Image (cartoon, rainbow, N blue to C red; front, side):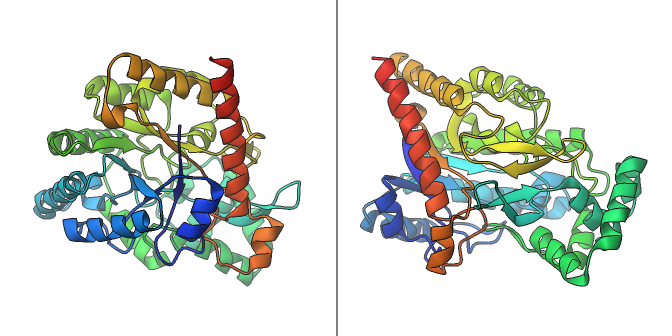
Length: 399
């Protein structure tokens, strides 16, 4: 697999020079300053690519062009076609600049959510966490979403009430900030902004969102194929409905339906191990085998399930969570080998991966750098080294 590292641009505390020293040869990145719906011009893409190449790296994966909420909800109809055209134009410009894998998310409002950014892991490092009880506190008592109580059981509502009654003002403000501020690369919301955005989603259920996603993919595919850009959709994170919103890509059934409906090989997936492992019902090893031919990009991270209902997650060490990374890596490597033997060319034979959501280690903290949550230097370098070792051992034994 091709070792990459996500880079959030010139303001990232982890510089391109740092990335070179991790041993990674490439980056996944995007024009993060561009809001959803705007066209990425060829000139902007080309200049950004040159910055990366001048540092001795390559831009391996575009992660991602944000999908405007109108393309997800279908509302308002008056804006839909122009926003779709803008996305198509950006994809064309990616291909023109020589970029051939686009990872994207179609999840409502948030690409990913967490409630804690500094959970104490057993070794003293700091991990990301999504506590569903804390999220219910936010939903019911801070956001005060209409119909929030209908989303939960009475036991869950009682736990949220007890939790909320013990929280200080500072704790409430911190929880609100973590959820609404927009984890790195995402749009930030105020509480009122979020209430307003939720109104735009009224009447959009899972089947509607699924149809809208299929419509989006079918519209983009001809342009992507002509440009030579593989589409790679990321699973929902966390993989369950949030804030009364539908989830669209959380299970093997969801991805099976997607690929059966749109079997084109340019319609692929970003296999995010941690996202998929965060759903109790998912068997990540089986999913790696089932969808290996569709995997265009791999996010390597791991989780343990959290909470009384096992509906939360804590980002574990890469080799400590519920997903068997050795088997996952073995499966995707086998798939890549098969593609090459089948005579496939270009991006279809590449298999970029990146170590994701590493812990904040003591040495990271000592530098005083302000790392994006989950995107420290030493923590992710540890994960990269672990996966590098797994891959080397598998390839050696396969000789």
